[in-house]
View 1 (cartoon, rainbow, N blue to C red):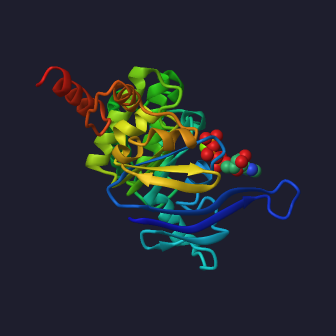
View 2: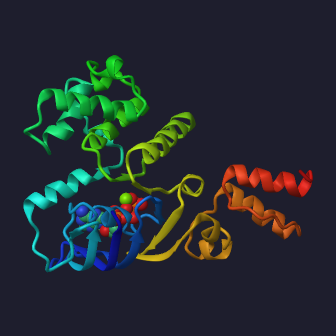
View 3: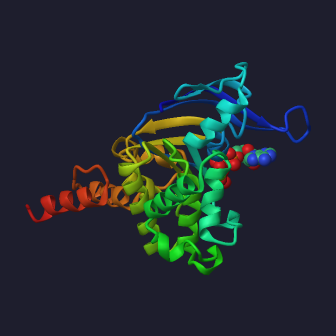
Length: 289
Ligand SMILES: Nc1ncnc2c1ncn2[C@@H]1O[C@H](COP(=O)(O)OP(=O)(O)OP(=O)(O)O)[C@@H](O)[C@H]1O
Ligand SMILES: [Mg+2]
């Protein structure tokens, strides 16, 4: 599913004294197959934008198409089609583990699918739950009867993600997926997202404040600022302009920071800023290998 947004605007509490414009003309294309990053300062409209993509926030002005679904303003929405869209575009909110509620891991993940497809047989539900828990790297038989509250923080988050994956979405959107996890938990979860991207979900969109994370994992990154997309590029092109990032008051990934320092010392290296490539470039420059 390709996502195309043109001139998308959104104001919270319009016509009141509390009105707040969150999106101010978002133009953006996200292609099927992307592992897409959305960055930008706090309050720049990232969360408001992603919630448009499965119809959670209705379009006020502008056009938005998600695959065959036209969510643009002025286009009549069919309730059934909106439900199907939500099963195809899965949304994982920040700290999703806070929304776990059922007595067992099984029931929690099963809720995700029964809600969308109430006529499925219990066998079909079970197969989907097993598949979703396996995708997030959990052992189905080990965890299915546990209370979600017996699990570690990282495991709880994976259960919450399984609850979205269970409908087999084509697009998976995650708001700050690794926030609050320890470095090992972060690494594990990102690896799982890459495995899922390869095996099951066609497009992954992550919102993140961490430049190292988006640089290492995304093939394309959009920068939001004051409700608009001000840059959309590959990490290689985006992070090669330190000045531009500074103007946007955004940090650089560590690899780009070191590359900048080297440049100041007159050493040029050519890299796409991903860790492996960066190490290769440094070795080539200093060790001639
Ligand atoms: N429910 C709401 N009611 C009123 N204003 C809101 C609401 N949600 C967000 N806003 C405002 O809309 C603007 C954009 O908010 P949004 O949450 O989309 O930003 P964000 O880029 O996701 O920020 P963060 O990085 O802090 O998560 C902000 O000024 C915010 O205060
Ligand atoms: Mg947000």
